[in-house]
Image (cartoon, rainbow, N blue to C red):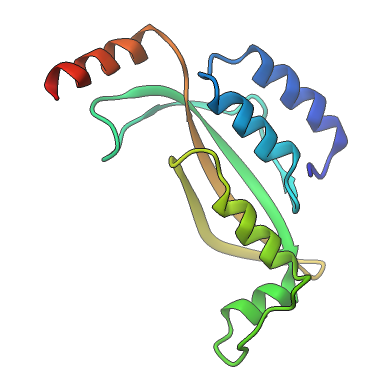
Length: 147
């Protein structure tokens, strides 16, 4: 769930007009709005970028979403502290880990820095989404020729 309800409309408007290929657009939208943990997106629309990595040949045009996730401080400390062997079954951390596991794209990273405020642990997640455009199709065609 988005921490600020006003962000939902802003996010809906942006993603509805974005040039992200289906089904990734719909899957990403659902992943955000159905989040079982509180999330905040500092900037909508997200930052435009050039994406390059081991999973692609060349540069793709895309967007980077920086997402701040809030989970229970004590759950997080129990999870990272070797003295504890369990996490409560209704832990916010379990929801967080399940949510991360369901991310609809393989192009993401999790910032390991954690900030603590008001008994919450704040984790930063960066998600990279490829934009659908002519350059994208040119790169895909070149990749097929190489293979």
